[in-house]
Length: 285
Image 1 (spheres, rainbow, N blue to C red):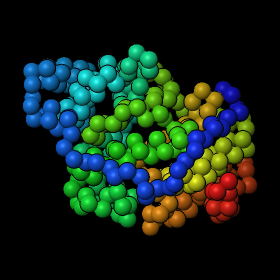
Image 2 (image 1 turned 135 degrees about the vertical axis):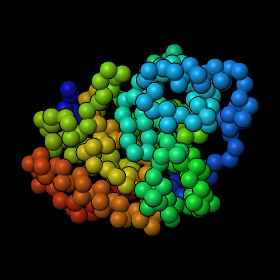
Image 3 (image 1 turned 30 degrees about the horizontal axis):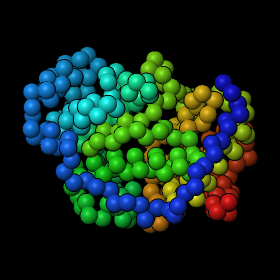
Image 4 (image 1 turned 90 degrees about the vertical axis):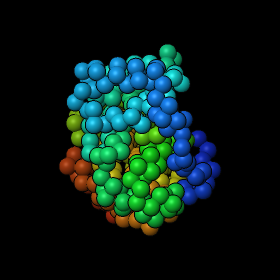
């Protein structure tokens, strides 16, 4: 594995955060397909839920989610589904075969019924993109999925190495697969770092670029930074907030403390408050 951890070149980023386009959670084509329940959709649903890799996760696949998957297949983003790659409280990530020019992709499915709205609230309250959602759990999860898609696009534009977002449909996000179908890319915690100083410099720069682009990750640690093809990649941006969010300062402080703690265990003299001060000082570079 290369220890260079080369940085990406950022694109031009216009403005920050709150002036993004409004996230639309209105009725979608997937909703209309679910209601129509045509023969092809029913056959797709039966074929998908009968496969071995999905039997243990059938609670994830309500009709609306199946309709979203069906729409993604119809649109050519997904050709065939593989097994689960990872599973958390809010979502399960599956491998899949994407379009011919992309090959393997990751499909992240947020559970509408199982998602813990209470865990999401601290990232939603105060975010202007969610002001009209109230306590409607379904609408919150659908908007959360679109929020992650938007956050990934903005992070990539700022030159932060994150999974490339490919498509979003309701509570389903299609994105670049990091690692392979047979082997997940290791987290920073799992990887053996021969040069932690270089790794820290890359992580610090990516945190700066996120902040300069108007984003704070909000849950950054060694567990959602992975090593893929000699690159450090930040994942799980669903909870990322704009820096104008009332809790963004608290989230940034926590992110910096987590990262400093990890690199301290690698033998480095890194302090969370110094990292945070550096990000603020260099955010406009």
